[in-house]
View 1: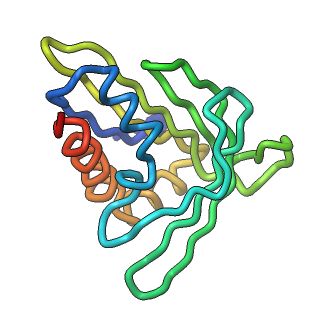
View 2: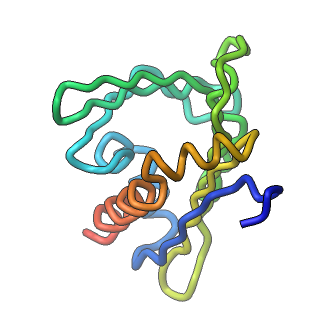
Length: 150
């Protein structure tokens, strides 16, 4: 990883159509968004550019991690881009990352790619230490399991 590479990513092949994956992504967010045994409540969400993306993560020992953010881009069936740098009222927050989730046709299924772009190498490294690889991989697996049910 070079100093200029401030992105972390995971990719998965999901044996379900992009339409099915998108439906699970947007209609069942609380079922796949964070690695178990953690779980999430949706505080405010609007699936549109500029819409709020506010969640609270709940840990197994009573931990609570609230996050505010905003969708920068929503392309139905293809792409979500969100950040914690501002909220839906465009008020600056303490930025950590920009998240990008993309899905696309691949064979008879879907290629899922999730990226986290950071402002600094220190933030990227902090995300790695927080368990990015394990956590974001678990989330991708949870999404795949739900989408592949049908």
